[in-house]
Length: 189
Image (cartoon, rainbow, N blue to C red; front, side):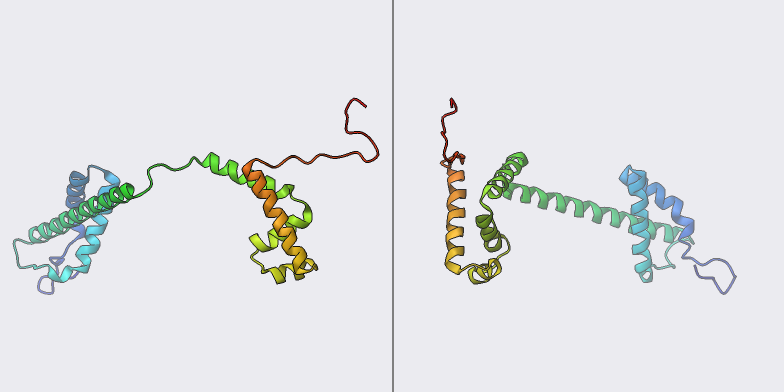
């Protein structure tokens, strides 16, 4: 606030004296106490930023300021409302452009679990080769060097691992059976 040098009274830019009026008007516009407080805050900020446009010579003391502050408050309210409408319109347009049907998250999680299980069922040497190339992004030569095997062996392991995963994907993979060496596979024995 500034002091009027002629009579020592508070000057004509007494914003604090207008807070009650601004709060009442903001509540009337927003119908919500919390939103009204936010509106008053934003209006005071805008009024402070544009205080140079206030003409103290218009109207009676306090009355000109009150009208100006209420006008600023109203303009902030209108700007907010326009902004919300524009945002709602953009969201509606984006929703129209968005895919309306999405796969349930459960199916995606189940699929990831199936791929992980199939990967973990690969023999260790195939799993290591596939991990280094497909997951870690190593080149064939670097992966072969890491595993201390020839590049041709790496390529063979990758090929077998990918074929096994494709067979699992297609449903043509057969479960591995243990064979008893020197015995019979017949459970009756």
